[in-house]
Length: 256
Image 1: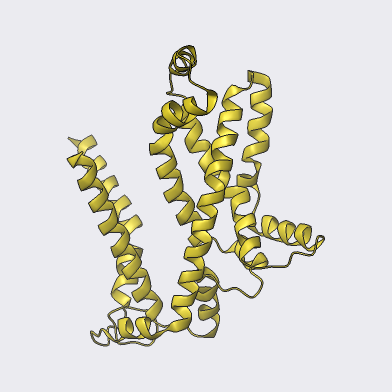
Image 2: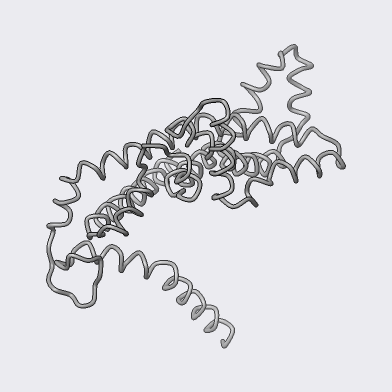
């Protein structure tokens, strides 16, 4: 009985720790205060949602982040998948060394990755901008893809490949018809994670953005110059869209 009560108490504390900041952030979007706060509550309003829709700079920053995220997914998925396939085909000793090298970008601070990327590409005449943001983000986001694909590959029965090859299929056909369908759930999850990692990244993006202003940089600038609850309204809309999308996905999955 005591153990069950402690477990329920732990879950309640965990839920409060995880969701209380989101609730406060969302509530601030309805407060008439010009600053993102819920205390004191000065009145309920929807003006900040109207201010959000009218803020062209904010929507441009969001659109820039969306373009970057799509490009990162397009580049990171093939790289991460290829790295996973290579890693799982190596012998034990070589695999340990290659694994350490491939995951090292995850252990490197984002500031270091951003500065190193900027210095390297400036040597060949490439300045900051969308392309360099994608390159910098892919350098560590592809590691997440690789880890998720590796986890999926550990459950793959290699005899299926051997059987397909024995029946006359080419290597490309085996990859398209056997391996790729098996990896699809991991690739979809990795793509979603890559989008989130790209949109929320700030440390690396800040150094390679050039004259571009992704959403995280836009919000950081607003914090210095004067943040309004319009940003809270945008965050609330994004959370609602993510939750609705997850519910629709789960409904369709269960229907199938």
